[in-house]
Length: 172
Image (tube, rainbow, N blue to C red):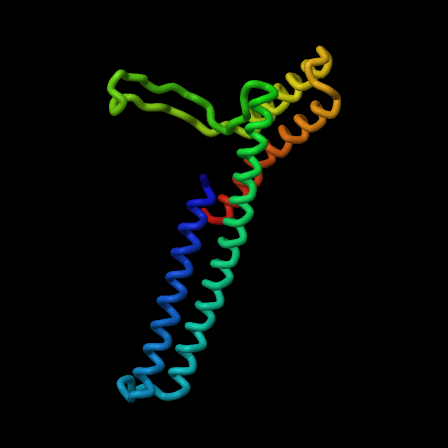
């Protein structure tokens, strides 16, 4: 899941910020002890630039953290909604097309080739699922309330892919 990648990015930025904070503190201590011969103005300029960098790292860290929390929630909701859709329709939507591959008795020689679906392909799949829901409603296999709930879940599932792409786009 993409939330794990965001978490790793968050940890990396946090560690980068901590390292910079430690470096600033070490620099100040060295200056206080007289190990660095710079004027007070020069040290203040260095500290000011370092603090600007710290603020930037904190803002990036916060953005990544917020995106991580949003993506984690989206992924959890998607799992639940996938289960409901799979139960009702026998399959759940995916943004991956199976483009081919080779299946071998030796698993190490097998491989899978996949490609990401285009927005048009996702929209077609969404319309197809909505048509399946309508057909089940017409044939009285599901109630109107169930059909409305399934239709809402389908919308939310496909919206997941848009939101995921939006979040990923901020961190490329």
